[in-house]
Length: 361
Image (cartoon, rainbow, N blue to C red):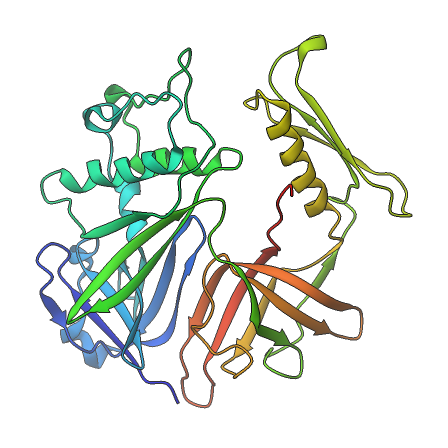
């Protein structure tokens, strides 16, 4: 059985505050383009170890499984409720929701014209951590450049000091653009120091994992729901780009598949070139032709897919069968939550899934 340990540190000094925090009812995990969450409960007899509500927002909470660091983040709530102390934490990126651009354009790094959006994420964290008492020790690693551009000469991307812009909204802006970068958080031991990393990559995080398999009757804990709906189905996608009237950029991607023709309009006014719009339309058409989707599965630790062997963004194979439907195919891990063993309850992980990654290729 896996052995878990939870501990807390000071966010600025790194000092270990509690070496072994005896939490129960624990759940934690990362997510795609988000900070991830952790929750747990502390019993009254361990009150002397508990972070107070006054310390919330200034204590780091960590989770370790079999001496492997699995998660880290900031405690935001530790408020007693009856005979329990629920503790709620979020990943390091949650800190950016409580920080603002007070100098404009991320301390002079902008305005941004034809900029790589991944660079803007790096700049945002650099600005955030250079302010007094603001350094969380987060290392932002940009693995690949992104060809999608942010800002134009006519309309540069700017962050105005007088608008009170949260730094989280800057990061959200650049990850929301079409064909933009993706990011997630990871932690690891570096000697005796817990490191914290935000990885930014393009065109995607994760990869297709032929070595992992999730199947009912093998390692899936219960029959998940197989969602099949025509609400989003289309085998014809009409892409509309920049411009107006006869000069509007337009691309149509269509196939015949023996089904009644269903169409979808993809409105992308920021796309100025036909090849880029055609690629987006094709990717959208492929995505919308996937009629079935498994949105979530809960799995056991198993040699077919050991807990912790997958990464955010990975495409994994599913073989899901129940009395209503069958699903054989791929899905993408958008988030996962680990549930440590407790009492007679075994260790499980809940994976939130999205449609498998597609490109216009």
